[in-house]
Length: 239
Image 1 (tube, rainbow, N blue to C red):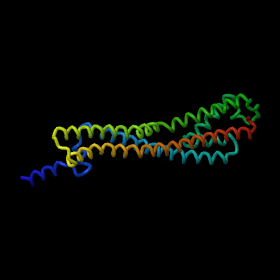
Image 2: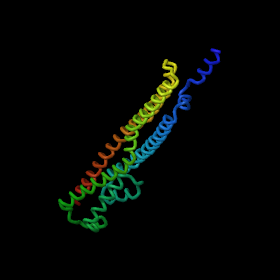
Image 3: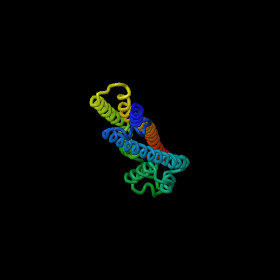
Image 4: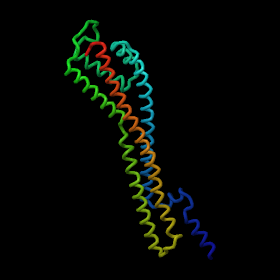
């Protein structure tokens, strides 16, 4: 009689992470489903941002090299129209549009025009700063989701663990058994939620920090590019 009973108990004890998940309580399984969904969202965002930053790096730096070799604003404008859209081309186009509004016909005519006044130059700088901020916001879209997932996932996992431990102790009290063989399976099932939460949070935090650094570097490059645009205007006597 003792051997069949031991076999039944052995079969009831989970021996792998998958069995722990399938034997877990409904609340713990719901928590795990939520964590899986958050993991998929975070990896999708990281893949999207990786492709976006790589595209901006390639197209933007190609335009920057062409811009540095250009002999005039008109040549740079022609290259901007031929180049793929990027934050650099949009900032350059915005600067040229503002200049054309301040000095109508100055970009199409070879005649000498009065340079921009001090207040107009300051307005141009504000326009470039505003456009840089817009580009930063556009590139930073969805990044707060990574920060949120990285900070919230451990709390969700802790909730699943606490609920699992509560259920395990309720089962112990109901069955009247408190030895380690009765406690360990329930606690192990509950800790699956914590392990899953850490597996979600760690990549999300790494991804957020990496892309936040890339975003700060891009903003610095855009600010420097705006300064180069103004320097070219000064060199050509437009300011």
